[in-house]
Length: 80
Image (cartoon, rainbow, N blue to C red; front, side, top):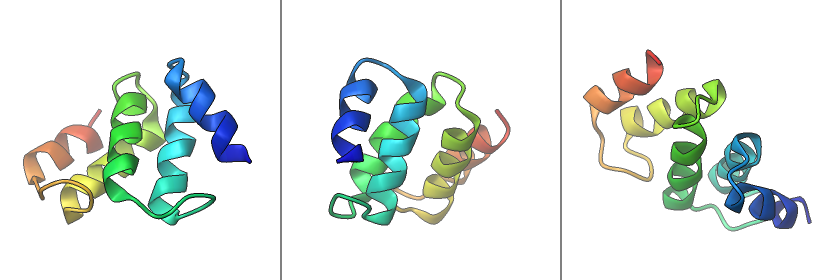
C-alpha cells in the first residue's frame, strides 16, 4: 500500500518519495525487485540533491546493478 502513495508523490516530484520508491524497487518491498526502476527513481531524487539517493545511485553505478557499470558516474554521485 505504501508503494501506491510513494508512486503518487514521486510522480509529483517529491524527492523523498522518489528515494523511497527506488528503495522499494531495490529490495522488492511491495513490488517485484527491479533495478532499472530503482535507478530511475534514485536518479530523480539524486538530481534534486537527496543524499541517500545519491549514495544508492553511486552504488548502482559502481556495481552495475540496473545500469552499465560506470566508475566515473559512481564517483560523481558519491562526491555530490
